[in-house]
Image 1 (spheres, rainbow, N blue to C red):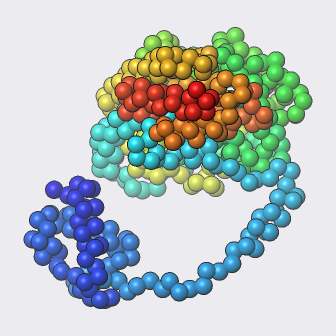
Image 2: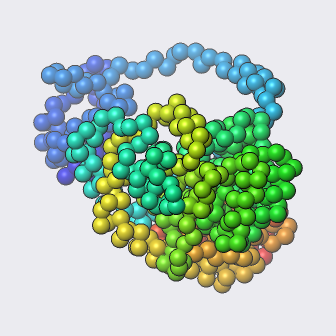
Image 3: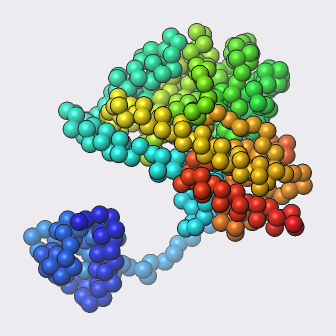
Length: 479
């Protein structure tokens, strides 16, 4: 037996005994450790490897394992205060400072403290991830001839073809680039399409990670309001006219955070408005594979209706699999494709071939459609459980739209509620929630909360999390 818990337990025991040996002193042999602790040779090897990685022991082939010499901790701390002047001086000549607040992004990535229910996550709970299917796909991929060689710079042709079929329309594999996750693809797109200092139109509210990308690139996000039918075309046209922007970033399907779907009537309007402005539409199709069981037929990607190369399309496998399965696609038509390709190569070279091979194995296996069907049912059940619990325990919170896809609900708080106070009270009550303020590029229209129902264990945890949120609201409202 050599599971991770056994390795960690043995490493802890050996770590506690290191003081028995002087620096440079030899530890017992692996065979002696196997006999003493009644564990496998592999467990011993991995535990010693962990201590070596921590700099506590040194392995000398043929000689054994020795306690490492103590680290020199007497070196002067140094003085980095000069950086404050240097970094601030850089921004003096910038039209848009590149200082970025990543706190809203980190909140969706950080693991919650023990006992805290995670309503602010951005990924599927481990119980919903296709771990066995991914492991099997990775194992099969590792046995493919050339799996560890350098891949084609644009990505494996078969994987590009698979993404192209999913986008539809006239898009071909030659117009698809494989990228390392949606965040990376969006970064490449904005760098390619908008020079620093220029405006970029964004939905309001929108995903804080995209706002962070724009600001890191020196762009100025300009908000365009969204309602239940997606971005409002008249306001989009007015924003293009007022700013001279050449890029609009949108999520036409199950928008984050509102869950809105761009209506059939507005889809051609958005394309027409952008085309007349000589602008690109960056379509972030991030949760198409997280549709709910009761959704019905989905609209095709916006790019499938665009023959003129207005739309630059981004889609990813990450949301439907695991945070670590970072394989995505960036698709575009016309001369812009070469610019996207050049930036992608300069910034990242390529996505590791084993990961691309594993993606091909996964999406081509019978386990893939089974996984998507299971997730569709689970997400519907969790969405319904959260909506019902909110309506029962927190009727004062407005829930204007319950989406048929994605992983979140967007709640408007009663007027006068302080978001920061409520988020802090919720955390003290044992539930982590996301405040609405970071989702707005400018002043917010009202106070909001974003709640995720995908990153928790199930309906029981959702019900308990809403109960804790009610307690936090009572504290803030003085009930």
